[in-house]
Length: 165
Ligand SMILES: [Zn+2]
Image (cartoon, rainbow, N blue to C red):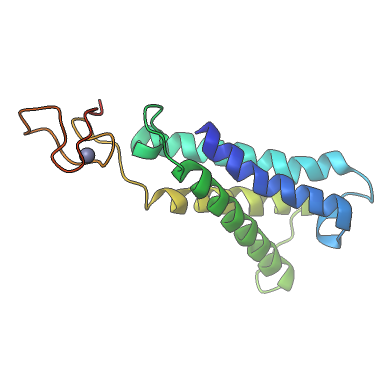
């Protein structure tokens, strides 16, 4: 989980760094020209909290093999990065839609930013977990092969010995 969230957060920290250097309107129009702490909350705090919360919720319901501490996998890093990038794009799309006037919204700009970032993050995290293999009790830790009916603990698929759960 930490690997995933670190990787995910790196994307948003990058966005924050870009916002600081670039001082684009999308980041600063509601920040009164210098409230970088507010921008930090929006671009780093909110996505990280939303990502951790969503991941924790999903992992409790359906644990993924790649997130098990016994498994060495690059998947959390990769999926964290992908989810980070996807959530940035989704949040930007949501904000663009809200500002385009197609959807009539009359709420505070700060609330709108958070309302765009939160669901975008949740959706991106959920999507990024879909391709990951689920952790099933009695299955191979290496490849996920079902070992429940197997007389030995050795996996006939890959030769792995550790079983989950
Ligand atoms: Zn196996």
